[in-house]
Amino acid sequence: MSKKLEENGLWESSRIIIPEHKEAYLKLMRDRQRRGKPELDDQEVQLIEQALIESYNSRKPVSVTVFSPFDDTVMTGVVTSINTARREVKLFRGEDDFSWIKLEDIISAG
Image (cartoon, rainbow, N blue to C red; front, side, top):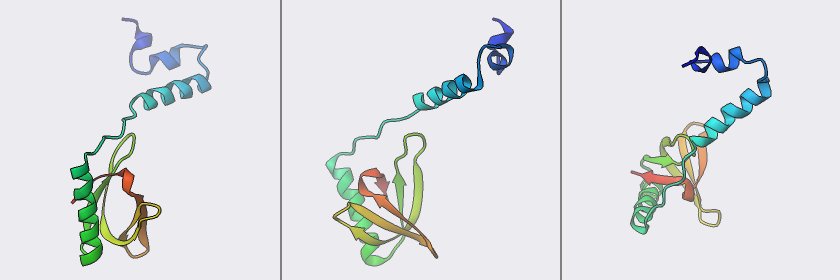
């Protein structure tokens, strides 16, 4: 195979590829790695809601996994507020450190 196709040779050896094309190609490659959100069954949703309510009532920490298209985020903290109208919970993680998390973005809790 040609040296142009190895490592970064394609970009360095070609004079017709402008930086905008390179950025667009790299963005396309990142977008191809995007994942779809997993579908949760009703039992899993109930378990997540139960863990959040238990953390809210007992002020005990809970770990939640928040969905992201590229990499899920695990957050640990105490649920201090539940907004049923907006379907969000406030996760307090420390002094002046909290996050509002949408219930639909939580894929596991425990």
